[in-house]
Amino acid sequence: MSVLAILEQAHGEWRRISWETLAAAQRIATQMGVQPAAAVIGEARELASKRLERAYSVDHPLLRDYTADGYAIALRQLVEKVRPLVVLFPHTYQVRDFAPKLATALGSVLVSDVVSHRVENGQLILTRQLFQGRLNVDIGFRGAPPYLASIQAGAHGVDQVEEGVCQVETFTPELLPNQIRTRPAPPFREAQGAVDLASAERIVCAGRGLQGAENIALLQRLADALGAELAASRPVCDGGWLPAERQVGSSGQTVAPKLYIAVGVSGAIQHLVGMKGSKTIVAINKDADAPIFEIADYGIVGDLFDVVPALADEIRKQARGGS
Ligand SMILES: Cc1cc2nc3c(=O)[nH]c(=O)nc-3n(C[C@H](O)[C@H](O)[C@H](O)COP(=O)(O)OP(=O)(O)OC[C@H]3O[C@@H](n4cnc5c(N)ncnc54)[C@H](O)[C@@H]3O)c2cc1C
Image (cartoon, rainbow, N blue to C red; front, side):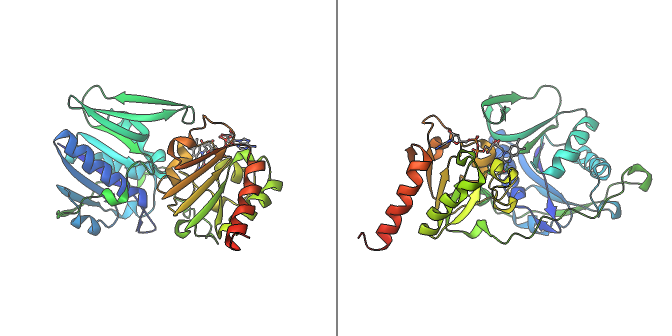
């Protein structure tokens, strides 16, 4: 029995969330007294240096392009061969597309978007969020394994992956062209962002509390005073107040600057997973109960339209030597 992590690459490159999922698999395996294993549709060479019982490179000409049919059929065969106790996936758009189909084919269910877990009396309990982070729910499995789950970005650290040595095996599934009912279109490519938020040392993030695009200039003044990049929560990008490439969170960029100032951001889990690795987090919010304060190192409860200009002025004054 093992905990099998089925990982993802994009254009031949490992996704960061794949390593986070691998860390989760290693941790859960240890807690459940079983071995971790991993697989990827693609080249698995890099897995040879991880602490795994075995790694699988799933290879077939019909898997060169992603299709839900191809992936679900191939991975079903792999899971039936490996017979793992738990199968973990990174919570990506691709996984959301094929993993429920795979779960159904295996007679199981998929617990998606898992943010944490614990092992109680040998039973795996997974925690996921409901109603946009307002409620946490604990889920245990019944029935026969395998138990399938997808792991939310940021729930585990890439630096938690344990190194080791393992054998990489090529697994070639049996797959016929007529089993694949969709024709793959050219893969979607995200726009090359002009901003690389991931390497920014300081970030000022605009939340919906800013109320409109016309107030972005207010934050830009604070960002300029600090030499910081501007980022945004999803509603700000959805509303076109800032471009999508500046979005931080589970469907945006993951950042870990030295300083992250969240302005008018409530702190939904989808936002937190993208920035909770920041060294120092400052939150400005008029609601003292906003969840963002739970992870903030410094919190300012107040109206951002008062706080932000005062802060920008003070930083400029300090930069000029306090005069
Ligand atoms: C599949 C999925 C993926 C998602 N991906 C992302 C993602 O990548 N990134 C992301 O950010 N979100 C994402 N979301 C959305 C997420 O769930 C939240 O809805 C979003 O993060 C909320 O943004 P916000 O904090 O800016 O807005 P709100 O939740 O509306 O919060 C606004 C905050 O501003 C405060 N405020 C209002 N006026 C003032 C004022 N004058 N002064 C001070 N404070 C004020 C309020 O008290 C409130 O806390 C995703 C959701 C889903 C379902």
